[in-house]
Length: 174
Image (cartoon, rainbow, N blue to C red; front, side):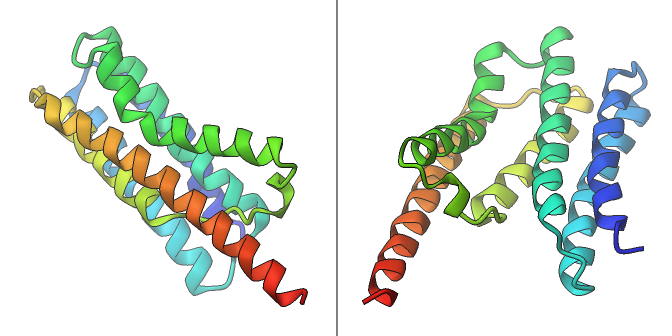
């Protein structure tokens, strides 16, 4: 039973395939279930102490896969432009940039993989945007600028966490 959070994370990969459906109700159900499984996997893992290194990696992979497939679907049908999709993914680009920085500093293995606040906010906004798009509602461009801002904030959060933990490690070794 302690593998349930990981199964919920993997389920988002399969749920993403439902976004290719022409039926609005199927798409809405997939988006709703993606949000529910994202909440439940983290909640169960923390509440029942089922946290695993595999799960901390699998959860964001499930999220990203769902979002990427969703964006491909919405681009193909013309609901979202490539620029808007890139703005929605700006936080993910920021995280990849930070990972490259850690690789350059040879510190990637020392950095704890954990969920960050702006990541949760971004995922909620992405799923909310998907709900509106699935209902054929136009999204005003400033909403996509918010995604860019969240990407920048995520980069700052990651950077300061890394800098703070480096200072703590140096001070504790004295």
